[in-house]
Image (cartoon, rainbow, N blue to C red; front, top):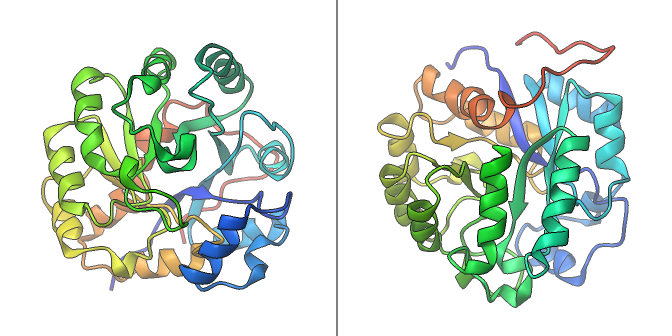
Length: 289
């Protein structure tokens, strides 16, 4: 059996209950994830902390929008800065200068683990990451030493997915070797392309958010056990997939304990958390179970 675990969950969504969800979220909830409307309910901080503690999760990264700096994500971080950090999403790449000024201010004012963009979720999915419209963001992330996570793989919602083919990151990594880049939400059906790119570029990583670990392809697990020991990062995308389920399935993967620890904890610590100020709170971080 695997030894005791420690983990970071690098993507959770505590904001679903704050506002009405777009129509496509209900479609993906029904058609793709087969969930009921409870995933759009309000999150209670104490229950999230309890679930994190029960599964050895030291810190979690909460999705946030730089254009709406209020609501549950900020309440969670303010209450427990030792347990939570934020993403910086909602970036309007067609208005680069005001967006980048807002991003820089957001990073200054909040504990931001990474910026995030879903290529299929803006601009009608017309702009792949190799498009020059992204270049100002790449430069700013390099200047700020801020990791950037980009959705890869066909999206679950019924929207165009071509822009999320990881092959578009080939040119990005060539031109921006300083950029700390992470593919987010896996890479299905282009896992082999994603793996080959990670072998090719040392600055490229992959996060398994929104993927049940038991369904991860053997090619990825082999890569984790071999050349990709430091490249693959755990995330649940809760409540789409629960923290409890994804941690439990990760513990059952055919991985050596040191590789499992890299996946669940150490790789995220290196890429996302080491650059942040040490967490502090009246509360204490739990010991590893």
